Length: 234
Image (cartoon, rainbow, N blue to C red; front, side, top):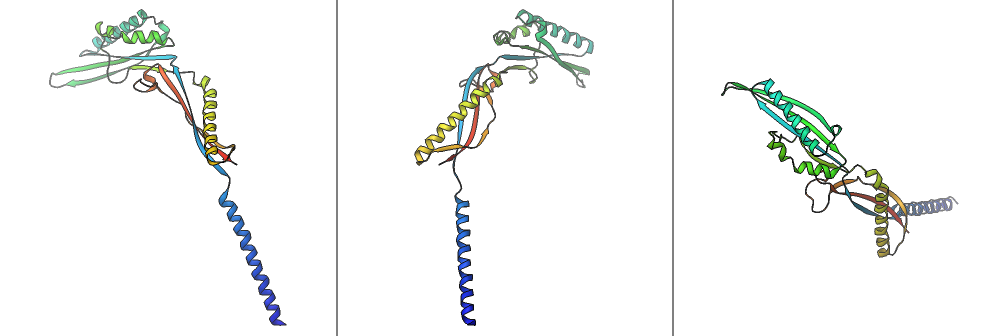
């Protein structure tokens, strides 16, 4: 009788272990499979024209006497303002952007060398007007203004209406991503169900094809955005 009880207990224990193994195995199988997904990218691009132009005109005046150098710097500033006025800029469109003085003693010549650098900034939404003035900057040199070439000056173009095109471009990028997901699903014999996760990339502005340099170097610009979307498949 005792032997029979032991056999029955062992059989029950063995059956329980087998059942637990089956349950655990099924659970692991479901975890491994999960939902089928596909991750795709959608791109939207749009050609735009800059609507703001900013020209920082940097000049320098040199000499050995501070008062004389300052007088030359003042004359240069007036010459620049007169040049811009002749090219259609109103006084409010031209603002000072700081100045600096550097000096050192030249022991070889036995004299002090003084340089005054200053910047004036012209800013306008009339991009064509700015391009004409910038093309004529050699006139400033002919009038005796030494333009500073240390990188403090330059012309930049800006597209300020990015928020106006963002919604449509995001929609275009999302549509492109969905089309790519549909094609993948068709090739794999499945169907796209829903968006599981989406990431919007940064908007970038560059020069159009054929325009050298960064986007700010030309009024002809290209706006681009890339979205990354994960779709579930069924």
